[in-house]
Length: 96
Image (tube, rainbow, N blue to C red; front, side, top):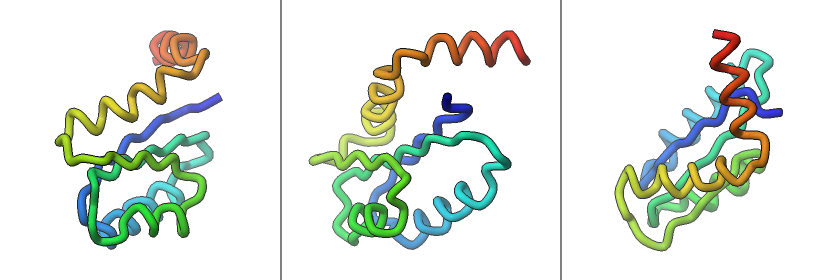
């Protein structure tokens, strides 16, 4: 069961993304974290770096830079494919 889904949208910020993903990995506090990176057609090797250094991250490579909302929606579609997402949402609402 996933405790937290994180969506990160990126475009040509490989070094900043590396630091961000290291921080997520090092500070998850025991939560089961699912991290998505949506790469908006970067040309600086961002996608390759994610694949090589962060195999646990779910990388979505967009063929076009459709912008922030477009990229978030690509990842959200993946989150919503999980059959248990509505139960997790309800559980988190009632535990709050």
